[in-house]
Length: 117
Image 1 (cartoon, one colour):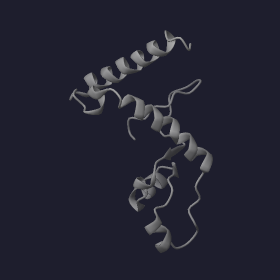
Image 2 (cartoon, rainbow, N blue to C red; image 1 turned 45 degrees about the horizontal axis):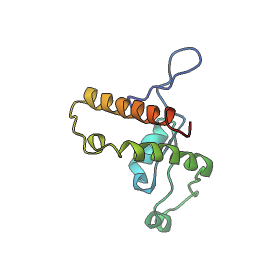
Image 3 (cartoon, helix red, strand yellow; image 1 turned 90 degrees about the horizontal axis):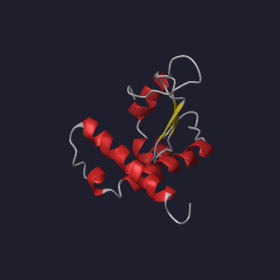
């Protein structure tokens, strides 16, 4: 989360997102407390075992924001079609980022020069 940098129309970039979306695997008290202490909204549904033991005000889930999470999930899924990225052949972060950029360029060129475009 410390590496997040959200560009603004003017001024310096924001370092804190407005909300963080995740699946039920990220539904832990420690994660929710950390997000709350940094004033970040958690868009994470509760696990079924937590719903039975939960006391107090029910945790609200922004369903529209949770649905937008699928855009990122689809992007990661097609990135993992490239074996080199899925198995993390590149151990250095700089080289791994380069391979991700190369995969995105490859994907765009396939789309741009296909018969459908």
